[in-house]
Length: 202
Length: 202
Picture 1 (cartoon, each protein chain N blue to C red):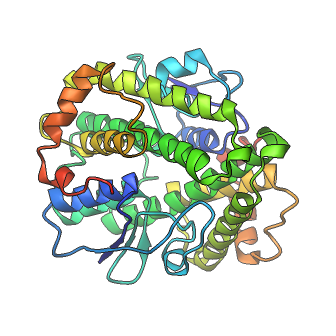
Picture 2 (picture 1 turned 90 degrees about the vertical axis):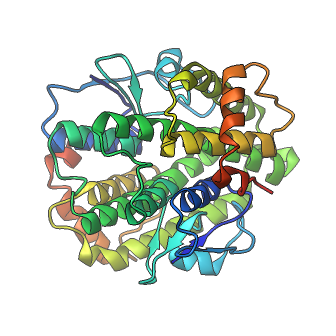
């Protein structure tokens, strides 16, 4: 199967991290679709995913699978992984953490589109400020929570690492480490994993 | 437990539909948080969900659970439902359909924010056009697919109904029925369900 992915996309990174965590590199080919922005169209991608979004998985049947939580759960299933725990309490804890980290990525990508793609004269400062507050509150929550993160990472912890990596990639000037020292230490230890070190956004 | 919800939110509607489908009305109190927009802050909601997003579920322990796919899967679990099928093929079919319909809602809400909340002089026409194309392609895909929809609705079919309901609610001028007659017929039959007829957005 093929994973339509871009090196800069945090959601695509999450899927690539899962591929590596599960040792599925020989079964999943990473395909670069070319330019994908909120104002571009990419016909090959659109044929697979009418929403035109990254990542999308192309199954051997030719069918498309998305969005990133669905792709990751599918990869976990075919790879026989435990990134989505079977135990119900652990499962919902992992899904909840994934949702929070996905939300940080969603808001960060929306901010990136606003600041780097939308023409400067069309920026909406109230929106920019509000999104930045969502990020701050969410990072503060992770700082509180990270003592309880699973030692054996689930999809939740892996997504948090991708979200923090995206902050470093696109918002390096907003240093999150100083006010979130526990989270910074946790992130540093996570970056020892091959899945994360091999997929740093570029 | 409490479901923080707003009558106009398609994602909150999905969760309310699931509550009714599973007969959980006595266990889930619906709570209106007041105004939630991309430029507003709502402290009560932010305490539960730092992303400040609707819907959010407040468990009896006081913990928050989100986003809508996680809430719906949790409700399905405690309600002993089959909206998220156990059979693997059926499960991923349902999750895939949910993701497509959630995507239509995401793009529609983003368009609504652009057109109705962002000051008119800050509108970005290239973005508006691109989002409208995503919707058109996705509805065309549903028109093709709807013959294969499950007769006993899964979370996928229920989400599609919420997405179409949101189109009618916020984009009534863009008549999707004429070019998608099979989907229109399917939607009409779905609206016979109490879960959907009781939650029409207002």
